[in-house]
Image (cartoon, rainbow, N blue to C red):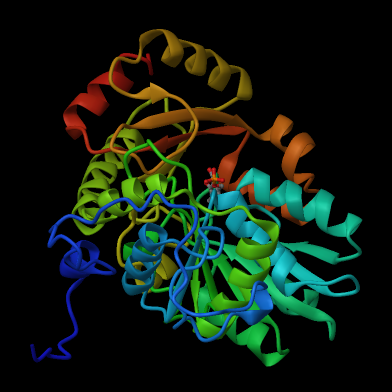
Length: 404
Ligand SMILES: Cc1ncc(COP(=O)(O)O)c(C=O)c1O
């Protein structure tokens, strides 16, 4: 059959990307390939170093697996990159980037605020391996430029950043990184591939916790890195085949099933979050709301320039930390629809209290202007709210019942 080369829209890509009817049975829905090994058709080498251009078929599920490959192709298509590698968690994806592209003596610039696990990995593990780390407020481009050295191999950003919703100008940071020969990796989990064309903005390695929006249903943990084929091939050899933290075929299948509705879900997340954010902003108990889709966000201009969907992530403040703790307790006792739980990007709305003081001790350790910038966005603490797919009126009624 003759195929057209027509570029498909995001809804079609989310559904059909990486998929094809099963050649063995004609099944329209993709099967789950729960096989650890694959019968070889040729006498082949036994090492990761024998990997060719990817045309050698499946060998062993730590190298690649058909169900995982289907998800990888779907995410690459959604993100607009040549290739993608899926791993067992978002943290496995972050670790893969750092340990594949950095060696002892190299220097990396990392956003001074990021998902706490990534911040702790950068602060605690990388220096132990002889990697020099500089943590920088990536919304301050001058600070980012000043941090880059001749030995800088990688600049790692996250936007919008977890948990404070501060944004990074990805094109500007890509230009800075590339001018010094460094790669730019970005954790785009909060935006999803629908909210940010990170690769189009020059990011070499686009990372996602696919536990969140891409999977979207709160039932499977996974991670992904999307980028150029040569970079993903290096990651596959090092992080999948050698470090071994691969995604299970069952989780890949669940996440691919979720990813099929990503464009629809992102539209609904954005619509719900806009309504809830507007309501929160007008509530007397709420002192500040941070949502990139609100004109009151300090980087609203950048948000409208860079983001194609504002997603469902909101943070809001209620004043002193003591007050936040009281409301958090009330949420645990009184919320009927929203779950008081960590994580994000699911169909169920989730909320969690994140107090600035304790987070500085465990994860961020910021001082001076970096602490001031954090507090500009988060005050004494924030509620991180992941607006799910429920009716906005029900979420508002649930919050109304607590914020009194
Ligand atoms: C922005 C971001 N990156 C990475 C991670 C880590 O992902 P995972 O929990 O899948 O390891 C998270 C988890 O919350 C996250 O929010």
